[in-house]
Amino acid sequence: MDFFLSRYRNLTVLLVVISAQLVLIAYQVKSNNSVPLIRVWAVTAVTPVEQGLEVVRRYTWGFVEDYFVLLGVRSANEKLRQENGQLKIENAYLKSELGTADRAKALSLFQAQSPSKTVAARIIGNGTGANSKVVFVDRGSTSGVESGMAVVTPEGIVGKVVDAYPTASLVMLITDPTFGAGVVSQRNRVHGTLRGQGHAECIVDFVQNEERVDLGEWFYTSGDDRIFPRGFPVGQVTAVRNGKTFKEIYVTPSAMQGGIEEVLVVINGVHQEIPDSEAASPGYKILAPPPSAVTQAPQETVQPAALTTDADRLREIYKAAGDAQHHVYGEGVPGSRPPDFTKVPGLRGAAPPPQTRPPVPASPGTAPSTPGGPTEAGTAKPPAPGAAPVSQPRAKAQTDKAPQPKPAPRPTSPILVTDPTDADPASDAAPPPSAKPGKPANTPASPPSNQ
Amino acid sequence: MTEYTERLLSESPRKHAGSRLRTIWLLIVPLVAILFEVYVPRFVPFLAYLELPLLVTVHFALSRGGPISAVFYGTAIGLAQDSLSHQPLGMYGIVKALVGYFAASVSMRFDVENPVVTFVLSFFFYFFHQFFYWVLARALLGEAVLFDAQQTLIFGLLNAAVALPLFRILDKLKGAS
Image (cartoon, rainbow over all chains, first blue to last red; front, side, top):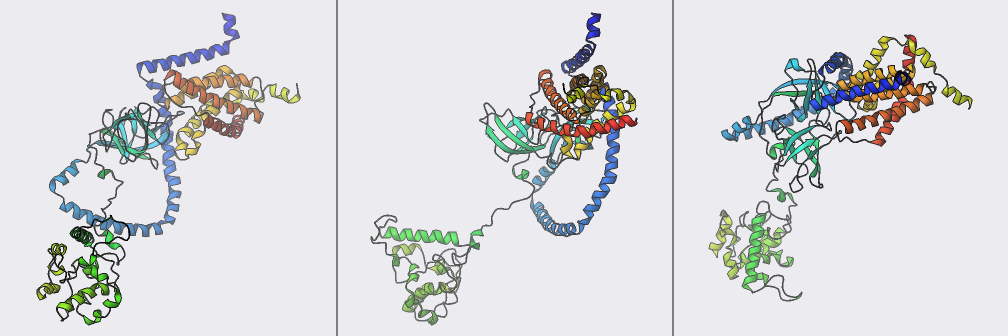
C-alpha cells in the first residue's frame, strides 16, 4: 500500500481532490443548497475591485466619451428642437384626447400603472461560466435584495436574483440556458415557459401545436412562477413553427436589446393586467386612413366625397335601365344589341362634340356650373374640356323647352341630368338633379318647375 | 533521435526558475485573470472568448512542473470561478485540477519553452477544458447544454494565440520577482 501511494502519489492526490469536489457537488445538488462561505469570500474579494474599476472607468473613460459626444451636440440640438416641436404638437393632441376621455377610462388607465416596489441597481460585472449568462449588480442583501427576486427594466424582464450577498447580488439573465419563467401571449393568452438558450433569443416551451401564436405577438409574464409579477413585457415572437409535440416559439427579449446597465430589482411585486394589443404597439399611434383618401386621386376621375354614393347611384340607374329594357348585362354575343342608353338620363352628355360646342357659349349660365360640377361625376371629368360636353345636352334640352338660359345645376348634384323629354320609367326612380332627395336646393332647382 | 526532439524532451528551464515565483504573484495573477473575465467582456464583448484563468493554470503547471501543486492551484482557481457563477462549487475546480495535472505531467516530457509546443498545449488544454466542463454539466447536473465544437476549436486557437505573449509576460514577471 505504501509502495502504491508513493509510486502513484500524484495520481492519488488528483483522485482525492476530484473525489472531494464530486462529493461537494453531490451535496449541493442533493440538498439544493450552496456552500455560502466560499462564495461570500470570492464575491467579497472580487466585487469591491469591480466597483472601484467601474468608478475609475466612469470618471476617466466617461470624460473622454463626453468630449466626443459634445462635438456633435450642435447638430443633435437642432434635431432635438425639431423633435421637440413635433412632440409638442403630439402632446397637445394627446391632451385634447385625454380631455375628451370619460372619467372611468382615465381611472382604469391610472389603475393599470404597476405599484410594484423596486430598487434600482447597476450591473457591475459578468459572472463566469461557459454557457451561463449571469451578471452581478451592486445591490445586495443590505439593500433588501433576496434570492428569487425578479429583475426588470421598463422595457421588460431581465432575469432573477439567484444569490444575494451583502454588497452585491448575482442575477441570472433570461438568456441563461437554465432560466425559466411563466409567460402568456398577449393576443391569444397562450401560456408557456420561457427558456434561455445562451444567446440573444429565448424560446417559449410547452405550447401545444394546436394553440395559436402569431408572429410579432408579445409575450408577458404570467405570474405563474411566483417570481415575476404578471403583466411585465417579455419580448416579441420572431419565429413560430410546429414541433413534434410543442410549438417552437422564438422570442426576442425586449429588455436585452441594446444592452443593459441599470435594472430594477422587484422587492415587492404586484400583478398587473396584460395590456391590449393596441397598447402594446411600439409606442406610436397609427391613425386610420382618412375617409377621403381616395379623393386624392387625379382630379379628372371623380368628385370628392360623393364618389361612392354617386357611383352606386349610377350603377342602380344603369341596372334599372337594363331591367326596364329586359336586358341582362354580361349576356349576348359581341355585336348584339345593347340596351338603349339614351334612355338613361345623363349619358347623353357623351354625344359627339360637334353638336356640343355651339351651345356652350350660348348658355353662359350653365358654363360656370359645369366645371367641378357634379354632373360629370359618373363620367370622366376633365377639368375644362369634359365639362362642356356634359353641360351641352342639358343646355340643349333646356333650350328645347325653355329658351332662356337656365341656371346651372347645383354643384353637389349627381352625374345624371334628367332630360325632361325622356319619359322613362327608370328615370322616375331618379328624380331630376335639382330635386333629388338629400341635396340642398339652390338655383338649379328651378328647371323642373320651369318645365 | 534528432537534436530537435532531444531539445523537446529535455528538461524545461522553467522548472528551475519556477521556485522564484513568489506567493504574491500566485494570488494576484489569478485574481487579475478572474477580474478580467468578469469585467472586461462587459465593454468588449468580443473578449469573452478569453479563458485567462485557464491559461494562468496552464502556465503555472508548465512552469512549476509539480503535478500536485498544479492540481491544487487549478482547483483553487476553479473554485474561485465557481464562486462567481451560479453553478455548484466544484465544476470548474475539477476541470482545472485535471488540466493542471496533465499540463504538469506534459511539462516533464517536453520543452515547454518552445512556442510551437506552447501553442499546441494551450490549444489542446482549452479544448479539453471546455469539453470536460460540458461533460460534467451534462453528467452531474443534467443540463442540456450544447457543445459547439467548431466554435470551441476557433476559440481554442485564439486562446492559444493569446497564450504565447501572455506566457512571456508571466515569465518576465516571474523573473522580476
